[in-house]
Length: 184
Image (cartoon, rainbow, N blue to C red):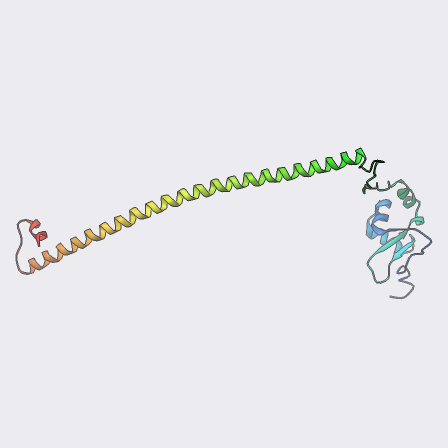
């Protein structure tokens, strides 16, 4: 690009007030890209800071910019200064302001404590319910273990009887009463 094509890349004149491209677009009720094209084609006095992506427009470039800035309310001072009364204490309005802020903070802390207490109570209930379920599961496990042990001992007795009966059949002896097989 030639130097003439980039004449809008410059610092603003310190004697003339400027607004940002975003503010100019808002005041002119135009899109930012449209206002940027106006600056590039010299339809609106403004430019781009060198080595930055920030664009600016002179306030006196359009009457709507001046009117918009004159209507814009100035921000109120939010920082309060403490004034002392002749006796060295804080003035009553400042004391009331401090008390109001303190009360709001206190209510916020109380609400946080209430929420945390409710959450802790809910967690305690969940833990207690989980503990009961775990105890029930342990009892069921013990019952199953006992049943398994009992069934193993019964299976061992059944195996012993089956072996004795097999041996007797091999020797061609068939008892009249199967109870005789368990007396050994």
